[in-house]
Image 1 (tube, rainbow, N blue to C red):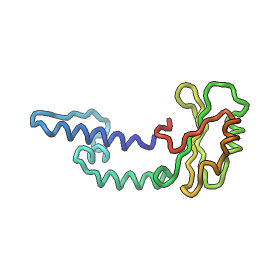
Image 2 (tube, rainbow, N blue to C red):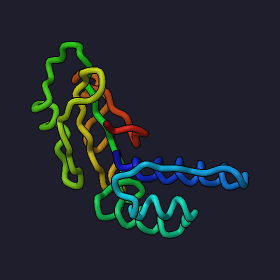
Image 3 (cartoon, rainbow, N blue to C red):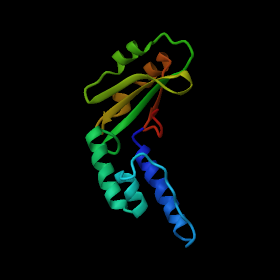
Image 4 (cartoon, one colour):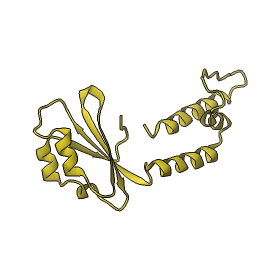
Length: 144
């Protein structure tokens, strides 16, 4: 999940902040990589370094805010559209397609990284999406 580093930083920084208010408190973190930059930045409260690194990583990998995400998901119900047929329909210049892959609860997922100048409707219209048996989520909060 591309937001994992952000969540980890937020959680460690929060713990550091609430525990440093008490002179007798102590934060112990067990880690395989004690010199991890994210961990060190969070413990120091170095938001600027974390932000600069995270923005650079997201730009390089094509994640928000530099691209939009579109998550397609099909549940366990029967659909006449398998993943291969659906992929043919949503194929579009400016769209990087990742998947299909197995999501939670046995669902099939396809993640699309979309150029900022494209709209989700450029890939597939609502009527076709409805007929396909797939569901779409624009800018999902969770992609796994």
